[in-house]
Image 1 (tube, rainbow, N blue to C red):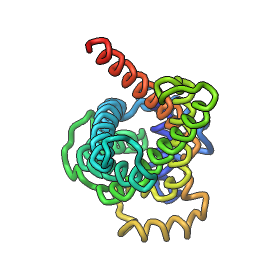
Image 2: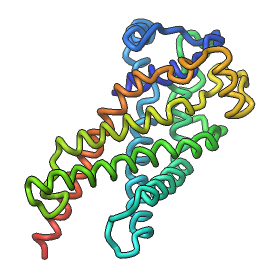
Image 3: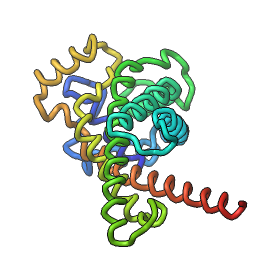
Length: 267
């Protein structure tokens, strides 16, 4: 799914005023153009930082999120209100942003290198300067993860309740399967993306500072591009991240089940 992430990034940063980035009509056109002009290497620009960032981010997020839920739960059970789920996910997202911002910065810069650049400034995961640029917008966007996990938890509770009536199961392990987790992961990701996508601030891809801050970026985008400017690249974003989210939750929930079964047998 990584080529779609490259397309999303390029759509987000191109506001029509950047001379050194090509213009794409839509997602298929972008994929074909990049493949023709840059080859497979262009479609997988920033791949290694993306793999590293995703692996570390998801691992840390689930760690911080589970601990936050435990801390917020007074009776030791995972029966939290939507507000507490939101708080736990936001806390986890903020901690993950602080840990992984340098990796995502490098990935984005590698993805924005095109043949139109006179020189290729970065050849790998090095070039450690200004590694925490964009950290404040990144911290602001923890709302994305907070909304996604709150939607996931609430939809999960609803699905367990509905299926328990039919199967008379005792809990999530008995009534939910991989198909259910796929639907939950995908639908929660769609909800989070639709709510927060317009607030993803775009970097100054050509090195010329055009946005003084987030509010200035919002004003300039609305002025020059209208409402469509806030949703550039959303098709590629959904095509990449919805399946990825579904797979992540299916793997996570099934691995948890496996661990529980192993512990039960050991006892």
